[in-house]
Amino acid sequence: MLKRFLTLFEDAKKEEQPKYSLELATAALLSEIVNADNEVTDEERKAYHQQLKKHVNLDEEALSLLLEEGEETSENAIDVVQFTKVVNAHCSADEKANIIRSLWAIAYADSTLAPLEESTIRQIADLLYVPHSQFIKTKLDVKQQNSSD
Image 1 (cartoon, rainbow, N blue to C red):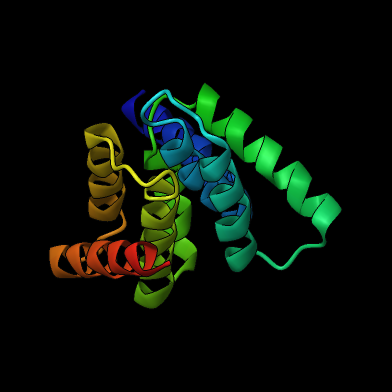
Image 2: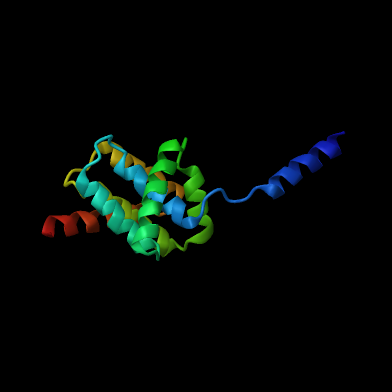
């Protein structure tokens, strides 16, 4: 009986397919920051578009669809773990750091950093195994870039 139960469990585990593509997982993570403080600004939406464009190679029509799908997926998600698992499976350390940089760019797009935005980025960085020093470095780089613009 136990053997049959274990076989059933193993079969179910083998059938698990990734629920999200890397592009959709990235779009959903970026969307998390747009909506983190419950104040979505035009600047944040524009930054979301610009930052996602850096991570995917799509034409404008496909990018627009991905932006919408990313927002919807993010809104319906219980947590970000499902997205970070996909990113961890497909991205190098540098690519993950670039995602964190994009998250900071979106957070600073409206010239203010809400505590919830920073907390969300910290959580995502931890789940992506981005070292704390890299988390801080990307934050400072983006903040300095925004203040010089």
